[in-house]
Length: 183
Picture 1 (cartoon, rainbow, N blue to C red):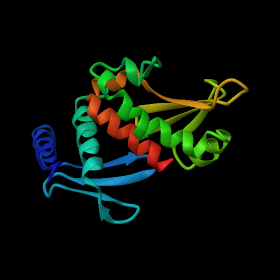
Picture 2 (cartoon, rainbow, N blue to C red; picture 1 turned 60 degrees about the horizontal axis):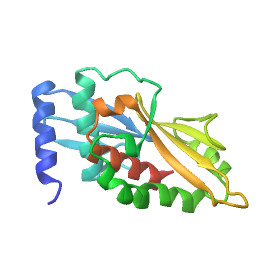
Picture 3 (cartoon, one colour; picture 1 turned 135 degrees about the vertical axis):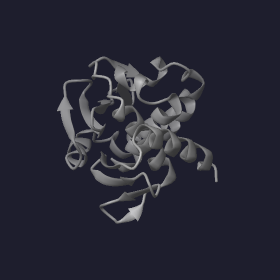
């Protein structure tokens, strides 16, 4: 019920942009079929309807993609640098950063092995860094710093600056949380 209005609005906007079209979209290694006429998004890996939060992300992505996605800037932003995000940072840390730290804080190198099933690559950033292509042309950078005598391990999730032209702050949070759960 909580997503009904957002879903309906997203479907309506996409129907105006691409009436009667169908799409295939990849999101973190899963392919989704988008049937605009019937308002159905199916995960092709399990032949099941996508969850509402994923559907909203896919619809918002497609809406921007039909108008041409902005080029990647290769300028990385932390969540705190995203407009209107400051009040959300404690929730972002709890829902995104801390789960990643719990999974990989003791062995960040394990993230590289896990991420190999996604469109991901290792980068020189922090002690361990990977860039994951969430949707096509929407990368997220996950960085780790190993613990030492003074500090515990730390992680961060960074976004290419172009994401600001694609998703609103809430969508960015949801996408990052989904990445944290899946990896």
